[in-house]
Each structure stands twice: as structure tokens, then as C-alpha cells.
Length: 325
Image 1 (cartoon, helix red, strand yellow):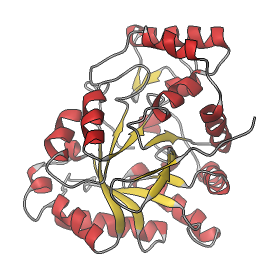
Image 2 (image 1 turned 180 degrees about the vertical axis):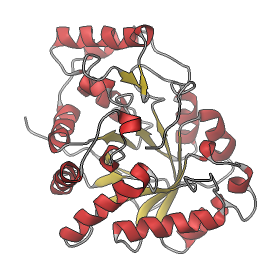
Image 3 (image 1 turned 90 degrees about the vertical axis):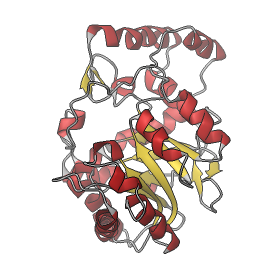
């Protein structure tokens, strides 16, 4: 199959251009409580080298992925390779103190300093404020002199070219997003072929010129690996009822002889509102598979059938027992 590199799009009004596909690296930090499996150092290293050797120059991580292991592993590989490749885009996130939930200006500054040290970089291209819904006090994030003020100060200092808001809960996201000059937003698990709850937020953000980074197009794995292999949706064990739409999709994909992962990935990538789709990978073969899936030509009749299938407008993580590891 001939491969095309996904087109590049601009991050808001910045000079930063990113491909419409991004590799997510949370799983490379070894997060068994979230994903249900382990990823050791060697596997992570091989996967990261496959990313850096490939045509997609966009990678996303965070301060708290694997309690810092994701960034540390990325930094180790970058050092082995002699630094960040020219033109490569690194996206990371500032996080609350994972022991006490503090997320004030001081914590924001420490978080970015920790990230830059682990990554071995002087700056990152995109820096998000991450998961404010899990902080101890939302006010210390949004107040004058709080975490958000510090985030934008960090951008002014040149430590990040663009800043964003990365989180799950849409109600909390909307309580913050419109009051600050964000360049980007990142949301996960809420815009895919089984859940469309982020639809109105994405439309409003797109209309306002905010770049949209849509994460977890596979609903945390099931839409990539299949219901028989990964019966988990949005980081939780799936119920018989929640598996029904996935199995209906699998039946359709079987008839068309196409991988459900290709359908799930392209559902996000082809959306004109979305700047880039963040797809997680945790082994080298998944890097190439992701490139194959984004290039597979899917028949229009398949998309027509997809429109007639049920999907959810509910928060897929409403009952999630959150574990950061």
C-alpha cells in the first residue's frame, strides 16, 4: 500500500503546523491500572524509535503519564538519537501534584520544569493544562495568579509555542475554555464511532479558531483490538449492553473486510473540525498499523451504514474509578 502522510494543519493563530495524526504515549509510561497491561522499558524504547523513524512528526505525552515514566522514556530515546529531530512537535501537559491534588501556579511551574528535565528539552511546542477536574480545588487553577495565569506566562517566556486545555469532563472544560485565549483543546473518549458527546464543544471551539486534538479514537483500545481481545471501554470493563454497539460495528466491518480500527481512526481524521487525532501506540508494529489504517480507502457505503447505528451522548467516564497509573 502506498502511504500518504496526513496533511498538516495550523494550531490556532500560531506558526505551528501539525499533521492530522499524532501518536499518544500514555501507555508507554506503563499504566496497567488504566490500560490493563504492562509496557516495559525495552518495548517502549522500540516503539518510540519506530515513531521517530516514521513520517509522523507529532507526539503527545504528559507529566503524570506513568508518574513521569512516559516523559522519561521519551527523553532517554531523544538523548540516544542526539536530540529532538528537526521539525518534530512535542506536546506535553502540566499536572497537579499527584499526592495532594494541589494545582496552583507554583505547581504549574514545577510541572513544566520536571517535564523539560525528563525530556531533555529547553522548550516544548505545545503545553496543556491537564485534568483540572481531578485537582483539589478548581479555583486555584482559574483564580488571578493561579495555574492558568502561570500557563500563559510560560508561553510568553517562550517555553511553549502554544498552550491548550486537555481533559475529559466536558462540563468542566466549558467552564474554563471560553474565558481564556487557548490555542488548542484536547479531549478523549468523547468523539468516536460509539460516543459523540463532545460534538457541540468541538463545533463551538472550531468556530472560535481553537485547534482540536481528539484523543482516544479507539475508546481506549476496544475499537483497535476488538471486543474479544480488549473488552474495555473508556478504561473500564465493558458491560454486555455497552458492548452491543461495538459488536454491531464489528459485524459491519467483517462484511466489508476492513479493520474496525481503520474505521474508528478515519472517523476522527476525516472530521474537518479536528486538527489532529491522537492515537495511542504501545508497540512498534502498532506504529505501522496506524499508518496503514489511516491510508486504507473505505467505501462510502460503509460510512452510510455507520450513520444509521446507535451511539451514546453520555459521558463515557461518568462512573469511572479513576486511577492515575
